[in-house]
Image (cartoon, rainbow, N blue to C red):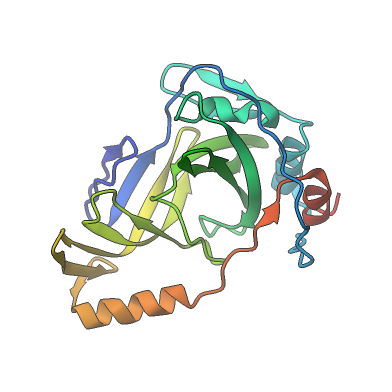
Length: 233
């Protein structure tokens, strides 16, 4: 198994890659909470130590950590957008979801960030030793998130897409396992892989169909009321 440090690029060997999410830009505007129609279906969770820390961060009662290339930043949730790209664009946290991304029976929070003139980003919040770390994910590399923690990805060149899941976090990066992928050229995919094995196009299409049929994660409008209800605060 070969693991490659990848700075937001999907360089994959043996189906496993390390995704380095660190990139720091200048000062940005603070987030604006979005108050919308509340989701009547709350996926309340049993409060544990890691979930209490997540709730405290979301409620602006505790700082989070972004372990950048040049400096380690401690930020309140109101200032989290300082770690995003597209400097100068108007951004805000739109929604959030609760999901176990790395299959360790602990909850992560995924923030959905919208941006004017941009498809936005996702920010993952993960607990390590009662501290909450933030990881930035591009819109094309982390979408169609399912309740089992799997998600879809696609390359900007349209030559590589599929689905994956996170298998491990560290303070500055996460390790991602490619479950299935289709690669090729602009004329179409010609190589299909599931669990590191070559398969036919028909087998791949059936696997993607099964992936698409999985239950989607529940997204909640990002506001204090929803945060407290989800974490039973």
